[in-house]
Image (cartoon, rainbow, N blue to C red; front, side, top):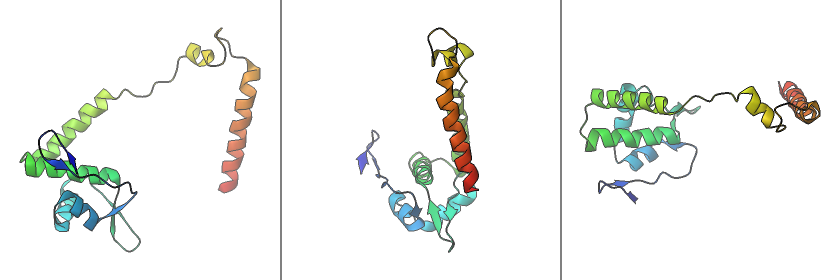
Length: 141
């Protein structure tokens, strides 16, 4: 367990792709029925289901469960308050991350030559690789 500044401990999430509901419940220190209830209250918490119907939580789901537990049990938020808090923080996070902008033509051209002009000979290997990838993808369909 890793100590947090507030004096509580935050469990270390194992490096796995998927977690079963029992593992997540144990990591979070709650009962499995609590996780199933949170799934009904928080739309973002949607674990995948295996072919046999078992819930398979991804790492981001486990992180959300830990955040929900912190909000509901330690900060004493209501379900509605936690939902609003998560929505507001998600919007703030989206505002902080600028959308990926394409490079201006001059910046793109500078990748191939310092004079701002694209040398067609330098583009030929790139074109050949793109066409090879397209053919490879076409064969796998």
